[in-house]
Length: 470
Figure 1 (tube, rainbow, N blue to C red):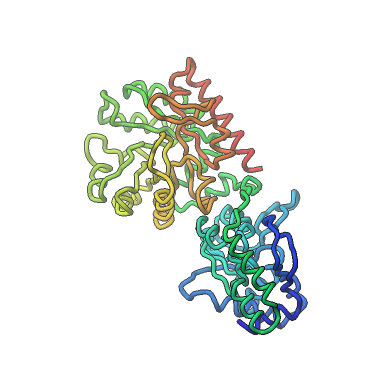
Figure 2: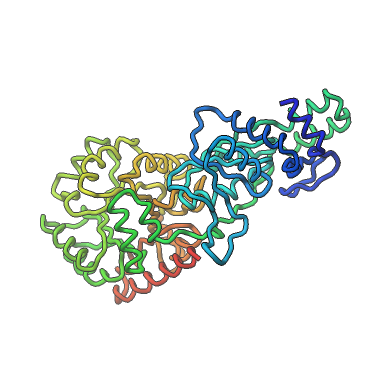
């Protein structure tokens, strides 16, 4: 490591003075690693040492260098170690394929980000966003030099572990010991580091990444019902789910018939229907098949695995027989998914996990949301997505595009009710917050003409989706 630091100093890649960094702060030390492309042996040494420094437990299928300085390092790593590489376009062209990520890859492959220098971690996050939007997983980044100014912590908050070859403190110490740096400048650099331990990350703009269309995302789905839902949405040009929270089964079947042409999904709460009869499911199924929408029973399973299997398959409601999709809390752990999957997967059914809720003061946030994502990834043959509120804000967002995001509490105007329900508009939910499906209840059910109201919501939701894709 000492030899590498001295070589960087020798080619004038380490400069001392007064420099403005990308983060906006002024620094007494500047590392210019763009010079290494002119020194092939040094570039080779850096790439070999960098890849060798990664723990053997770190898994990855591809590498991607942060443009532009890290591109030659990543290329050298790829060629020398026979590791496939992809490239992130810093400027997406408005002609040709208009791709943000170039190269051949498969959804769910793991990509290691390679960077030359990390200060706040912003450049790594700007690269991780389009990689994740393309369906790749990003959990690790390796960097030649860590300036120790909050980058490691900022990346950790976004689900990325940083592996650094050299710290700035170590570099300064070695240069001082070898007589390349005076005591006064050493003190100035160390004082600077102490006073700038946490450089804030500017907001990484995610809407610039062209979103995949529902047709493309259908191809990523491992679950037949999840695939079909994407296909129905694309075919009907609808990302509208009706929350059919009405007082009787007769009312529910009536409104399902009225709004069926406008929706991709109908959400039920079957246990609130006083006139439920065993043939309810077959009647609703017939309407769903007629108008080409799926049925989502909002049961919110929350018990241990053995109990939920009986609740799902048995009882008076026999949900497994007629609902395409169910949902569950993860409060009891991944065993609940195992239990529901045992009965649902052989029948081609699907599960949504409650990652967030739209009620004021709810506890489904932070670590709870992250745990839901992890469980979904481990069960992606059965879990097709999430009930969410603001998936664009999640650490590591955007999540795997094979997952569907469905958001409740949607109305034409923002606000709330007396019981804590919070409402957002279709555009806010889909375009700004990164959801796919708008779940609308009272805005349609209480309308004078539910069919016309459903059409208006469908158009607004679909327009927001098209804007996000372009």
